[in-house]
Image 1 (spheres, one colour):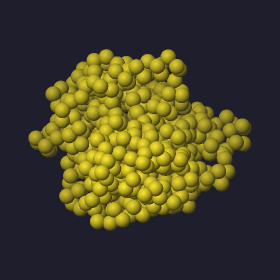
Image 2 (cartoon, rainbow, N blue to C red):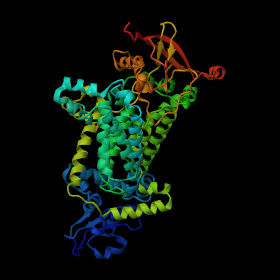
Image 3 (tube, rainbow, N blue to C red):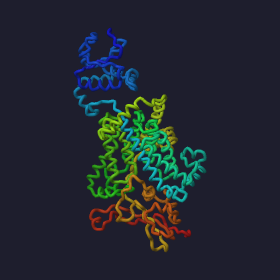
Image 4 (tube, one colour):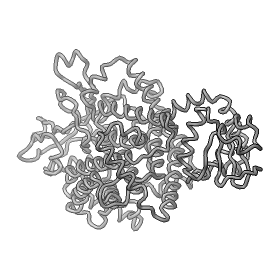
Length: 616
């Protein structure tokens, strides 16, 4: 016990130790004036009961009661005066073995402080924080608004031909069938506002309304209610869109959009958002996205991933390659294998850096962004790459991002941050966020477990829980290209009036004309062109929508024909229609120089046997 009892907890440290001063500054920023900090060189006379050599070995915490604590326990008890930092002290007292391990680690660090000073500066820099994320989340929400705009607008201009009343898979007919088969369960399993009205005008309202509302997010107006509306509208379109809205990036946008509702500030006009636990849920989402993609490739058993030859095929077999993909395909195999290794490192190792100290998080963010840029250069993956990059923005704190903004903008941001720091504190907000975080983490762990051990091997209760919430897309499975296609079958639709002379229908973006260069189309997604890639990998039995497509073309549906580049029968539909299956492959350098062809193809057979307009 100490006779000279301080009025506040008093933490005494070695003022000559640079490592100690660095961490003391950090703890001081957390506890504020609730704890007094002083170097022992200045206060040893105030506490004669503590020998000088003890101060040199470890920190001492003198409590107002006169009790003295040392080492790791002293640090943990001091941090109980920092909001939200009392967990370590509780674990020290409650978990068997935790005190022994933590004190052993403390002694190790204390004995090698110069070394750990270097490690700390490498991993966290000279400023340990706490670091704010006002600017990073402000930027993320604007990027999310842009992505919502792209997603809604891209689908809006295709909606009539895809799920309109005269489209390939009319939403109204789909919902009627679902209601007939499932009864009242249909409303839960297919959550969509289209249950109230599935006519074309209402579907157009959802898509166009989402496009316009997303502009409000970009400008930071009514952010929370608008984000909620956008999530509901997009979920409605995804549920009613059937195979045309079944892509992983649609689910990723819904999952990120749902979390963003709870991240955004409650506001009418633009301002910066407050830091919260939602930030960590976004990082958990990014971790699951990347790690699931990498692990899924390994657990799939696909030999091309395991022997690092997947990129020998990927560039020409992916759904919509870019012109750069053709040139990448010409590179030597050693480069492709090295690229696969780089990809596995980004997807399997760097995701763990997301939860690591500050500078390792920066490395993870930079690595994932670099991978997304490379993917976007060689393939048209709509808004997926941009959305993943937006998630990476949340790995960078304000101190890092400010260097990329002009001085006037930084000053304006700092003023807003100071104003907002004391506003909008709601009771029960932390409790609500805590419950949400627990649910998301629980479901996310189920999803990750399914990737590691296989979803069929999960406990039945976990499988049912995940399936129960899956219609709302708040936690999803991820893993692009688990199985790498090693050939590229391509469907070519042809029409004829005499059954002998056939003319090709040309799609806007998918391969057809051998001399047509692979297009740049992202961030727009031509969803029919994408589905044609999937259809070519199967048959009409597992792609029944293709039969509807053929019927609509034969009927001359203007909405469906607008989804195509060239209709060889502009006056009236042909009498006969068929679909052939070709195998496509990129040409080599010599062939392209000689012929100008980007593609070469070989007929493999008939995909869809001829049908006629008169039922022959």
